[in-house]
View (tube, rainbow, N blue to C red):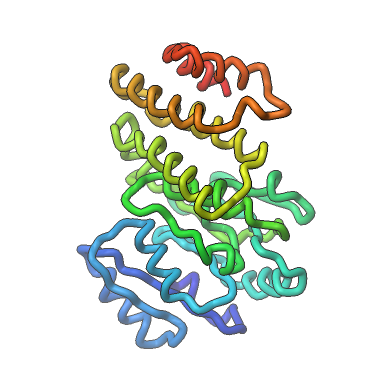
Length: 288
C-alpha cells in the first residue's frame, strides 16, 4: 500500500483495494489507509477468487488507464506520470514496462524491455507490469472459477492492440511467493484447468469476433500441447490420457491445417493428434 499511495504521482488517479475475504487484519489495515488517502477505495467482499476480484475492480474503476498489482508486489509509483504521458501523447493502447523479480528482499532477475520493441517481442502472459487503455477490457473479463485466468491476455486482449509501447523503466517488483498457486499446486488435478480455460478462450474469441490469425493458431497449439503437458506432468497416466482426448477435440476444431508456415515439430504434433497417439503427443509436446 505504501508503494501505491504517495506524493510521487502528481496527476489524478484512483487506487482500488479489494479485500477478498481475508481472515487476518487486512481489512482493518486498508481502512486505516483509507482515512488518510482520498484516492483509495476499499471494497470488502466474501472470498470469490482472483478473477472475480479483478472483475469487481473493473466495475468500480473510472480511469482511462488501468494497471494491476498483486497483494505481495510493489509498484514504482514515481514513473507512472511519465509512462501515462507517453501513452496519451502517442495514443498507446497497451504499455509493457520492465520489472524486477525479487526473493527475500533482493532482486534475483531484472526483466528489461526497450523502446521500439514490438508487442510480440516485448510482452508476456502476465497482466501486471502493464498499463492498459481501459477500452481494451470493455467487453473482456477474467474467467471466474477457473485457474490460469491470466491466459486471457494473450488470446483476447493482445489481438485488439494496434498501438503498443515498451519501456525500459521498471514498474513492478514482483515477489516470488513459495505459497503461491504454481508452487503449491504442482502435480495436482487442478492443473487440468489449463484445458478448461483454453476451451473458454475459444468460445470468447468467437463471441467477441476476434479474427483467427496464424499467430493465434500457433498460440492455441502451444497452449494445448507444451503448456498443457507441462502442467499435467506428474498426474496419473490415465488422467493425462483423458486430458489428451479432450485436448484433441479442441485442437481438431481449429483450422491448424490451414497454417501457411508450420515447423516440423508442429506437423509431428498434429500427426500424433490425428492418429490418437497419446504417448507420442506427450513426448513431442515437451519439445515444443
